[in-house]
Image (cartoon, rainbow, N blue to C red):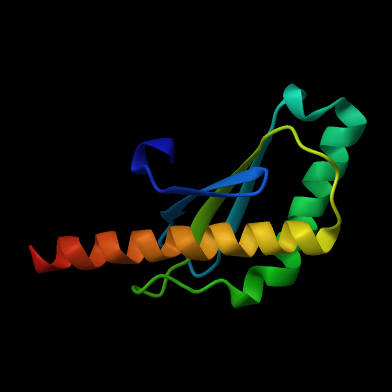
Length: 110
């Protein structure tokens, strides 16, 4: 996933994106101890999962009809609400998918 080298950041999150060849998107989370204690990390994970659940249908599919694997990493930050998480998440995912699609188009032309 990290070797595919497509990542975009918004706010306190970085999203790594890679096509998975499946008909759906999958989410992975990496929330380190620098974000906070176990309670804080759990809350951050719940917020990201909820943002993914709300925005899953608005995430575009790959040009080949497959979905994407999305891995979200989080840096230390002040706590924010769900709307901010959704904004960060969608912004980063859409920007990363644009890069993946451009890479696929460029490889197809060669």
